[in-house]
Length: 115
Length: 109
Image (cartoon, rainbow over all chains, first blue to last red; front, top):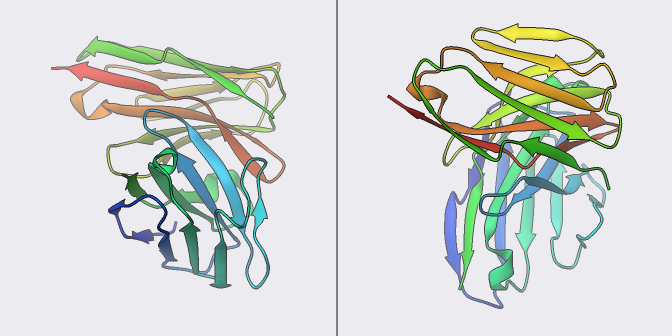
């Protein structure tokens, strides 16, 4: 298994500002992902964080809005840029420790509120 | 893209009752998984299913991978208050998971 921590756990931000969320895994993992979970909704994959190269974004998400870094095998950041109230959501980091879906673990999430 | 329809959206039951929820899809998945999410936490895997027709149990939980590979169900027997939470199904195909909309379960003592 893997223990995933995220910082901050929650934040309240002003419109137009940016927030960077950090994700740390306690062991080396094969893949890292970022999800968004809007209030009362399902999880939507934003992107796969690739080590040492640009993230792979899902349809509807772009690098300018959600820049992602993954400098090593255990750490990744997601930035939510130029925020608007529509960005209010829970952002979840996830990591795959092996090759099977039952080896995918989730962080506790970062609850973001944009005023 | 792929979509999963999960039902019911919410359930209110008495402690001791059995619960059933299901997911259907228009697409075939190679894997079906069921997660539980508690408030302020990320989803935690309950059961993973890898073969059409597979029936798997984890304590009081039982899940099945539909024979058509387009659906799955989760049963919880003899519910207890700590079963409260949101349950998500997820279909695995390729390199990503597609999640259902979730079932909010409330258990009254």
